[in-house]
Image 1 (spheres, helix red, strand yellow):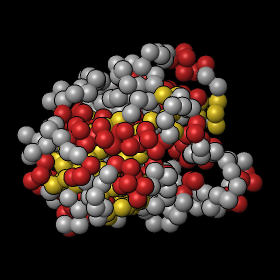
Image 2 (spheres, rainbow, N blue to C red; image 1 turned 180 degrees about the vertical axis):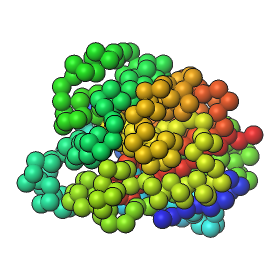
Image 3 (tube, helix red, strand yellow; image 1 turned 90 degrees about the horizontal axis):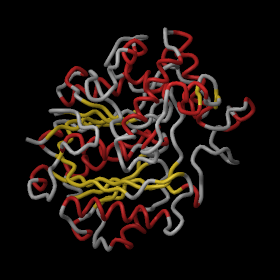
Length: 395
């Protein structure tokens, strides 16, 4: 488990940037690499910095937008950090930021950009079945060809063990869409979703219906991280990184994305229980101190598990928690995924959730939580490694 301790006085996010978000295959006039570079430049402009100020680049999960090529494209004179969180798909979202913080705290870098760009219509499609997958022989013969099928098994087990129903999954999807309808950047900005629409949608992999599954989109997002001392000179309001962690529980291996051989006690979980203890402990906070959250919503059922694993409610209580309206903006106990999340804003392997977390702390979200001072963000759930962080309002 990697923990950034005492990050409150050390590292801040000073810039955020993104491209347009479109449906899968919607960006045709630029390459994925160009779109990603544009998001990075947008984030630097937001921070009042230039490529010459950057000396670190960080990403995750086999990102094809390679740091050495990005250095040349952006004109970064000297690269002191080129880091990537291994495997875990979107599990490394916040992990890429924890690596940036570690480098800054140790003096190995001054300004690091964490980024992700996905234009899957132009090349490799994440989650698509193909030859040569690691441990594919453990799942392919059983028809588990893609993440919706693989993670549906975990959700099914969860719903078997605890009083969780399709109505509770629907609440996650409907909340995301309502938030996206207020966000002009969201792919689903102008498409309402009713409860009737949700239940009329086709099955993808039972118990997951169409609207339980994240979008497939084109786009890129980036954030700029630097020390608290340097953050004071940023153009935009800095946001403190109170804690950033990454890691995996015992015996997970590749988890649901391959052998499903994680320990039985942790099978119906997000692989975030141990991580949560480190996350809140290093920030000196409890789940009750969190005002708003951006929880990686690749599949609605995983969000319910995360609410329990992260300590926002007890085991088996997430259904009742969401049914109470707790997730809803503006009056819920814990508004989540206020930009629409990956279910309704865009699928950028979670980096768009980080951008929204920063907006909440700056007070600029389209579904702004009043007086929010803390925001939890998670990376991918039910994978290994996973990651999470807590952001704090500066001042």
